[in-house]
Length: 238
Image 1: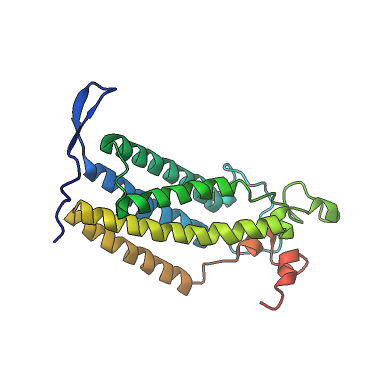
Image 2: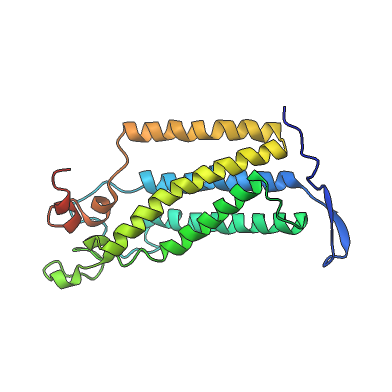
């Protein structure tokens, strides 16, 4: 059984408050576990399995938070943004009350996780334009109105997807390490049991979704399944 590390402070004097306060590290632990082991996997799961079944013309209305057909994208984008901002707040409070960067495995992995999360948000701004033959105000008979980084699969879009998807899983890997090392420093038996169970719940759900083949191709779901679309034509044998 792990014991609480002796260097972990239980109270701190904050000069800007002019008093000593108790440090509740259990709140920090619960917050970070909720963010990185529940919310982040949830919003990744939503965009993975929430996309609609591909149709001939795809999604024609503009990507917008008010358009229900884009709920899966909205949840992924704004949900992850909220999660990252929450984790930033959690790290900031931890640094303020500890009054130092300990250099422990937990602190290093924690900073790496949050930093990678912020980079994900910033990199998301580089996803480029949408485009599409049937999208929003495009004229299906005028190819000059179809272009978009996503629809045309530009180099910019390919770079974005290559990094965004891969780095997202790596960020989760760091988060699991941060959570595990944190619970070794500050044992919380009940939370540890919860941390052990949560991944199996997601695993069960993912298996069910894969069984029912609910992981639709994003390009086809958004732009349509026709071979006239650039990326569908490029993958006509896939």
